[in-house]
Image 1 (cartoon, helix red, strand yellow):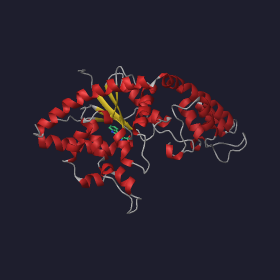
Image 2 (tube, helix red, strand yellow):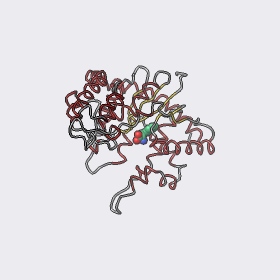
Image 3 (cartoon, rainbow, N blue to C red):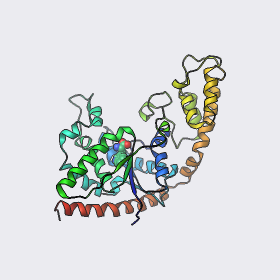
Image 4 (spheres, protein in one colour):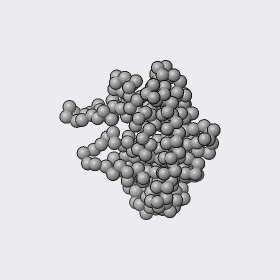
Length: 329
Ligand code: TRP
């Protein structure tokens, strides 16, 4: 087994397609990490079920699409293990066992849980799975004894809970789980990509640019992007800080400072900015889109088979230790 330091990270497959916010905030940092770590890149399909809508979801199909986006973005399956959570049943077993040493009060105080349940009425069913979300996430992480977990700020409470669960396990049953660090993206300015309407980029707001969009779809989406409302004519001054197109130029254009100045001074129109941005984004994501188009269903199934075999091998060894420590065997 490799002696490289391990990193585990995951993404929920609530949406079948990843957007450029997912890419900049999560996938791009993984690409750097895979250069000198053994990466386990997990599609968290069970986590996607914690918010089961009335309609059944295409859980498997969505997970396969997300895995394709991982590989298209540059996760190298010959180095990193790409796998789907539900293909490695050890996650369920460890989650169940960790649940035995996790207080319900702690889970009820978890900010994500409080957020998701704050506006529910008494008729709405809050699932046991939603309450236990961080326990399953702890199992995801601890199975791989990683040195670090790369996640955004919103996940920090989950990582803290994972640490508390690990410490409490180690104190009760003996040292099984080593400490890990939160791996923070060095390039934090890229990690918050606004949506086309300047709200958070989210499928539910219909304000995303997707990795798998065609250049034409990208052009169409950018055409409708939010710009400075008071800038109607080219000569009207713009406010780049509040304009989504200018925000993206900052990310993708080497000349953004000049473009912002021109926008402020009324020396460039929004449609010019939109056209330039469309070119830049299409160029930036072209290699990923080409890789995605070349990836067949069989290719991704092979990649996931290899990835889940590798993940299972490590996870099974950890589970042996856990069962022994808990005197289940
Ligand atoms: N909760 C994470 C999110 O919503 C997804 C996730 C599941 C995860 N398991 C994980 C992230 C383990 C890091 C490690 O983005």
